[in-house]
Length: 506
Image 1 (tube, rainbow, N blue to C red):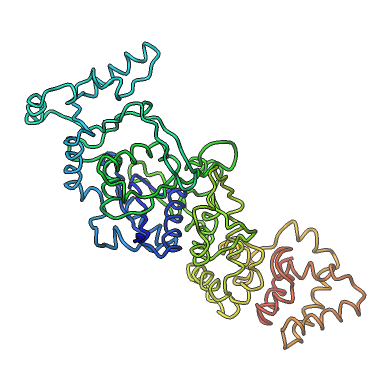
Image 2 (image 1 turned 90 degrees about the vertical axis):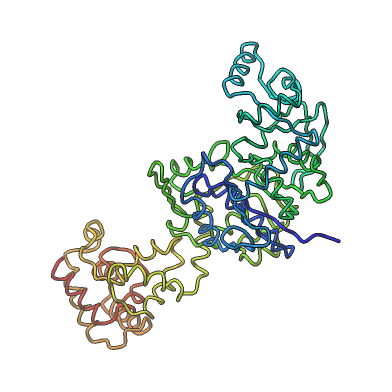
């Protein structure tokens, strides 16, 4: 019987969640939804020295903001709880000892100082020290001791680690869903530490045991874990879990916008774009990292951008809802090569989503900004402003900043524009225009355009001679949409008030 698809996103709470981590979560989520499976969140906090307070909560909130609903895991619960590895540590010892008993792992009593001395000795000969089949026979471990000596050391509480006994000269031809066949030779691999005498497992043991116990069918993770694949496959074999071993897929790296190499948080700081979904303050250093949420990106735009970093649907379509992505996503469309991150393209995605948003939804966001400044404005007019202006902007905050002239009477006039358009004969023209504006009752675009255009034509004036200073008077600068749209929205009273102010000031 075919197993139900079960995938997990298993971050470590060592800081803010990098957008590469969010993409890993997204691809796991899309895969699960595509095949009607489960998406789990597991927190891998076995390395307590790197634990950052607040990081776990940040991960959970980030996934919520992105719209990636967790079916099972931390914050949700489920059949295989707990989902926080530090709460599962009693489980791992049993499995570590099982490997020792089967001859697939051994106790290592070498101190850090002894291993450092060994490294230096090798470096002196121009060699690299690897704890493996070549060196393990000369080191302080249970492979070189009788059972009585091992027992004595354990009972005396001597510090130890349990290492995996990597087989010698074994060619491993392993399958990766994205990369196809990948080849490793066990002689080049070290005897990784699986368990420490402080009772904590390493990532390698904990993630294999948890994936097995939680019935994970597919492990979809970043390319940086590819070198760990042979160890993980050998661990499944050592436990006798080959029949239920998950399939593996290693996602391509997200690359810097310029130059070579993996995108880092420092690249974002240097080039002025976020690399985290939400703002994060490092509790140790106080360093603050800004996020896509606070920078005004829509979560849908952020997710849409991430989905196309390394995956494509095989068509020219670029805008996808989360539902569409779930329907289309398969791992065979994920590329092997790295995906270059483009901050400008990310803005483009946000623009597309802003334009597609209903005016009422954008007006809600603008209303929040108005309330923050204690500005009261007609709601229907706010919607009209959003409809009129949204094509011009990537972010709602920019729309609001650029359109404040609708909501608040300008207090000053742009010096450059005034100099350019407010000439010696302008005040007389503007006074004449003011009288016409006072005589109009219907301030609809069609009506004001008809009356003012007729007056300009009748006087034999160029439209620019009238409309440019009119714009400066009403808006405070030579910017904005069509003037007849502007005065329709601000209305007769406000139009006359602004004209009178301009005439008395300029």
